[in-house]
Amino acid sequence: MSPSIRWRIAVPYVFLIVVAMTGLAVYLSNVVRGAYLDSLEAQLGGEAQIIGDVLAPALAQDKPGTTFDVQANHYADLLDARVTIIGADGVVLGESDEDRTQMDNHLFRPEVQQALAEGQGSSIRLSRTVEVDMMYVAQRVESDGKVVGFARVALPLRQVEANVNRLRWAVFSAALLTVGGAALLALLIAERTARPVRELTRVVQRVSEGDLHARLLPTTRDEVGTLTRAFNQMSDRLRGTITMLVEERGRLAAVLDNMADGAIITDGDGHVRLINPAAVRILGADEKTAMGRSFAEVARDHRIIDLWQQCRDECEERVAPVEVGRQQPFLQVIVTPLQDAEPGACLVILQDLTRVRRLETVRRDFISNISHELRTPLASLKALADTLRDGALEDPPAARRFLNRMEVEVDALTQMVQELLELSRIESGQVGFEIAPVPVADVVNPSLERLRPQAERADLQLSIDMAPDLPLVLADAERVRQVITNLVHNAIKFTPPGGEVAISAKAGGDEVIISVRDTGVGIPADDLPRIFERFYKADRARSGGGTGLGLAIAKHIVLAHGGRIWAESVEGRGSTFSVALRVQTAE
Image 1 (cartoon, helix red, strand yellow):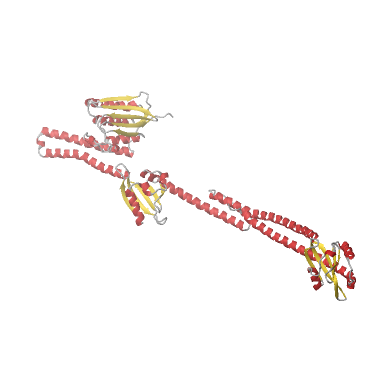
Image 2 (cartoon, helix red, strand yellow; image 1 turned 90 degrees about the vertical axis):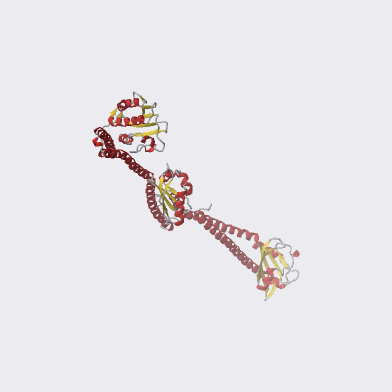
């Protein structure tokens, strides 16, 4: 983990101060020591010169056996130093601290040699006599221009070093105080510099976490203040941009979510990056697992995949119809390249044309069915008219019979036209329904009583199962009787002799469900979804006569009541038609 900016500022600054103050302390201690030694050397040199001047006459006499121990001791006591009197030949003539008779010739001592050459010499060394570091200062003694001896004053350096150490500690103490103050100042400066940066960092983190309203008030006019103001301006622009993008994304998502057509966007690698609910429904996929998977895994139809691959390879829009299956959607697939967004990216539109195709099928079947229904009576009328024209008019009984037959065909045509007109009026809302609370028995029993003789003639058992405490239903009684009559009539018509037609009514939530069940021929599974279309007849039912409009009229009457109608059937085992009507609710 990298150190904070505070330490990156403070540590080098403190390190620089420590190095500078250490160097300065060492330098000053050395300078002080040198100055102190120079001062001491000058002091000792002056004292040696005084001793030499005093003893010069005595040394000039050069009497054998003359000693200067007394004088050396005297001056040593006065100066608190070691005093040595040396003859011109280097023989020690007087010594204050040691037995001079045991001492070597001092002529070649460094300080003596320097004094001999320059008049005064000094040396710092370990004394072999006393085994102590000493500073020696020797002064050449002359008389009448002739060297008669040397006066040497020495002082142990332990006192000098003690004094120098005291000075050195003083210097180092001052340096430590300076370093401490400078370090504290460095930390304060670093903290003052780093604080706005940390605050700016926290605000940036809040913005990165989604808080686009986070701002920082500039407190300085330096570079950090300029950076803070620039960041606030950037945040304002960023918030505006993100808000605009979110609004556009929301509008796009709303459009995609509510599109009837499926939409899929794939990237350059062929993976799904966007899929709307319509596409999920059409392809039978799962939106969560589809995202990020390859298009082939999501589409799972080689024709759609081939169309998508052609668009990617040729970078051209591809359009083709795809019929997934007999009971599956009929799709119009449009694949458009998105080269501007990403090379290889594509937009796949799945237009579900199943309803359009179904309407076309219904229209085609309607034309076919109505043509079939009209062709038979018209052909019959044409044949009867031709027969009359060819001479049947001359045979009154035959002519009367043909005219009766023509009247029957005209009545059938009239009934068909009337039913078509009624269906059209119901669909367009032109028929007024007098909806009121009515007992369920009032709409069921009259229809049963009316058709019971017909059921008996067909050798069918007609039964009813209706609870006595059913709630009132909201209905136009006459129109609902028409629906029940139509359903019971169809059940009787398509049930073989010995069968059963059962009518039941039961409450279910806020509805009453009236069901008509028979044990007749049933309806094929392929025909069941279309039995409520006008003129549509299953193959088995077509031989039974009728216009094919009864169930269509019944459906629209029920829908106009706000109810439901549906059928369940197994071919060869009978059918059940159910009508759900709303019940009267307490206000």
